[in-house]
Length: 72
Image 1 (cartoon, helix red, strand yellow):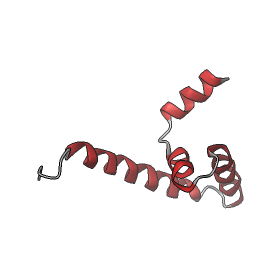
Image 2 (cartoon, one colour):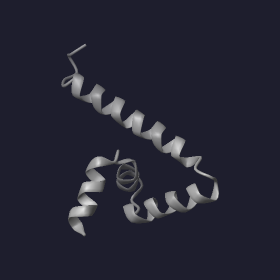
Image 3 (tube, one colour):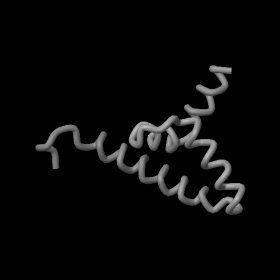
């Protein structure tokens, strides 16, 4: 079961994990809430999830680009 969870988390964007770490909530509860809200609203939170994943990817790329303050 752990191998399956690790595979899914490594292939996913990590938005729920990032939110859990930032807000101090359990990642599993954030994932379940996302799933329930997605079913209730016919999938509209998927757009929010994709926007957050895109933003995380861009910010990760920008942090990797500039390693010091003096790099412009």
